[in-house]
Amino acid sequence: MKIAHLILAYAAPAQLSKLIGALEDEHAWFFVHLDKKADLNAFAFLQNHERITLVPDRVDVGWGAYSIVEATLRGFKAVVDSGIDFGYVNLLSGADYPLQSPPEIHDYFVRNAGKNFMEYYSVHNEWTEAIPRLTEYHLTNYNFPCKYLVQKWLNKLLPARTMPAGLEPVGRSQWMSLTLDAVRYMLDYLDGHPGVTKFFKLTWAPDEIIFQTILYNSPFRSSLVNDNLRYIDWSKGQASPKVLTEEDLDRVLASGKLFARKFDLARFPAVIAKLDRKIQNHHYK
Image (cartoon, rainbow, N blue to C red; front, side):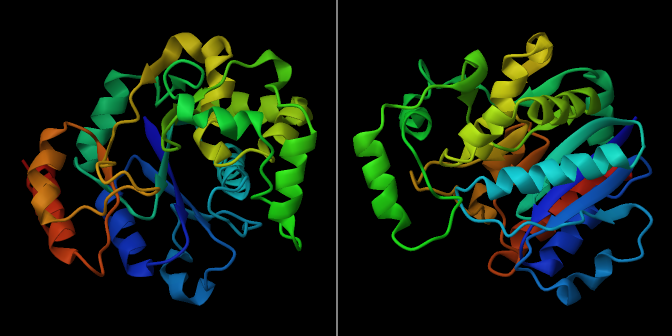
């Protein structure tokens, strides 16, 4: 089984290089979307590598905006357009890192072939704090003077938004591991439902809802596993997860997950060094 690791990155070329190195394997290919703001010269190591594809038509990604959905879709399209018959497409950020060796990751997906791994909590029943993302207008994806004033008046004057196409919204984490068939389905679905794209362009952080919702409301629902296979620490209650350090390592490794985030090689290199040793020890057993 071949695995496509689709990595969304915007900075930290040294850390991205280490991430790719930790996942390199005869079964692994890499598709990297670099934020349009990133300096390509700093990522020259990605060039001329037969198993690394730089996603074309880079997107200028804004936090909480639809632009990250667009970057992901362009990555998905690059994977599909490669013509390689991948068993899984594994969506990562440049701040992620594996907790298992490449053979262990490969074997896990072989044992679970056909399953789609992502978090999908009901927005209306379990993840209710996300309801305003869908019922209110959000202009996060747009850039023009006084846009937040316009947004305020849109929400004062217009009725609450409703989900398009009869979709039941679910979601949570944007990071997921999907079959190539599921990725193809999402691309085809959005091509055929422009109203869904239009709706999510006015949604805050749509990357945490759009893909899960499409698959949940599709024939793929029975294949979904409500587990994104990632260790992420939200204990600080902030908008972004905790940056993991050596103090977290025992909990991270005890989680049994395949990947974890977030890491910062520049600030906390020791935790990644220890993970490398753990991965290498398992690799060569």
